[in-house]
Image 1: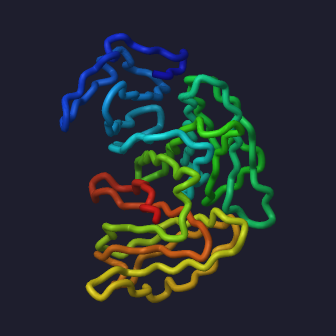
Image 2 (image 1 turned 135 degrees about the vertical axis):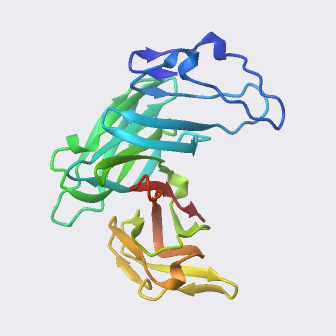
Length: 288
């Protein structure tokens, strides 16, 4: 467990037995980590294989949201994000976790900005078994608006990175958390198995992760196979550029979607929450 005060390895969680084909729930607060402002967790199986996920409620400190998400099964030297944003009432924090035994230097580079804007960048030191919370608005020259990002280690596969993004939602705010896409997750094809049923603007955010311009097409998958969605054919996306895509045509609603590019892409979804909660939640589409 990595906290604001340093690394801790609680003995009450060592040797925790999980029977075959079963689920066990750990209450981290009851395990001695209540009211931790920063907390990153490594779960290591001494035998067999496991899947670990987290259930997290953000309440207070300017955040409001609920997250149920899988953890990362591995570390990586690169972590990519498409749907970052800076603006009034918005807060974007990159949680950069180093589970390894060695200190890591991590480069943070902002992508998807206008050609006239030099990409803001910085290098951070991430101590062993520690997590650094980095607010992207602290970058010099960071403009308002949509942007992508890539966080790169200078020394190999030794990082795990999540993005916490809080945006205004009516009279309140909504906080979403997305685990980044690893280096191997960049793909020329992304799948959305469950699409929205009601027309939605800015439903997809696509980042061109290559140094060459790309063409992007959204296909609807029906009984007859793939069919391009009108108005979403051969969309030009400049090198390292970013676009948001509206899903308004009936062909894009209630069907699985395929987002296909001529270069490697990263695709995030912006999904509406319930009518009572408001705002959007974020998630990666599925690469490959």
